[in-house]
Length: 98
Length: 510
Image (cartoon, rainbow over all chains, first blue to last red; front, side, top):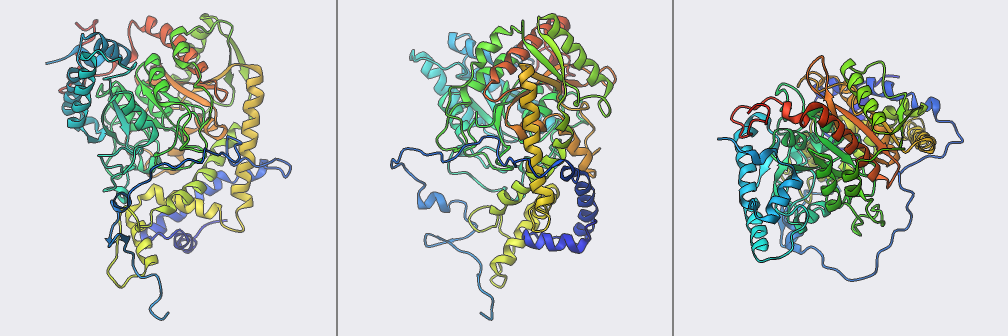
């Protein structure tokens, strides 16, 4: 199988990344080569092998339920690209027609 | 003007500060002067924090004068990879998308450095979001290997390794997801340790692939790395994957270096075709030295290691695509195209298109593909199963021996620019280091000589079972002892002197 620039454009849209036609043309063959080289994993991964998602099999890590300090509003907003009256200002979230 | 302070070990500097032979201010000023003299050639640092470093040093000297007890590394300068949050300086992760980001809390590792009175000199360069083996994906330009300025210092932690090899700092912090501490250590003739996954806290470390990322110590000697290991490791309630157990006795092991009766396994699959002859030669010589020191050498096969690189390049991008989704230009970082007309999605898309570099985009898209429906089972699902097979290979190997060894990376430092347009060739630099990240065990790189063909450093990798980090130091110390005796001094004594360097000549040169 091989990835076309159109395939890469679709993936980039899913990942919310704007790519130029030149970037798409460069990425498609590179991703192809990488995918081809990693495809071998499917050959050894037989059905009865359990998957490992994490090196440490930890479950339900709890801490004591004690009240501790947290960041102030000022700290939280300190890196905001745009803030307004103690809140993050963001671009419009609805379509014009909506 | 040159100074003998720069060549001294961190252990030695700390002792000199405790006894009053040197002041912390004097030591800090010396390293800042060296940074000033050589960093325009090396570009190890993204930010130097001279004023605050001197303030910390003055506080340490005042403590000593007041008769207060000083910790084992009090007053010793250190460089921190720019992936760890440190209040008061930008934390960029080597990316334009975080160029002006200033953290409002400290990473736990950084907080422990502060609490133990280490002097933070500044933040070091890295590949963007720690994605690379050369620092060439950094949005702020590459670092250079002090052994040969036309070559890579390794990556992603090439700023930290270059700072050590250029004597701009006696200690540094790195992070290792697929080899980003060990491969830079290998190509610069320095020591780099990846602790057991969960041994050091990831709190405040900008995430690349959370199930693989692990901060760790970088140093010029095995004992210095152990001293730093004891400062930064240990349980942290702020990281849910942090191990709640005592830190393995690494300092004791580093000081002992006794490998008599240890069973050391040479991994068959990590050698042969694709490995530089000088790398193989120095590796074999190091194995022979460990045998002379009383270790028993066995040959071990880990048949699934050949699938480690493919599995890693599915698992890591999958985690990357998820972790980097947070850079949306809404709460922090770069925001592009907010013109009042563009929607939030358009702004996100423009921000990420302009803010991320080529490698970050490549990995996000690869991860998006590997996780997409229809391909999930064949790619990500299979890679997770391979991860199990690799862990089983380790279990079988550690049933036969105490540690495993291999070269740290197949070649010595390659030339800057040589692999930028060939991602696969770049990825192969991590061929030997990736299995440890997938299994979460402890792993290290120690200098073992210069390859005869190019005169560049070769690294010796040691791998130990989870929470047996002390074995890395035991083997590393034995090797260091034997090699320093053979060489007549540390390997870095043989590094070429950089222009304007304040480094005093070695005893031999004097």
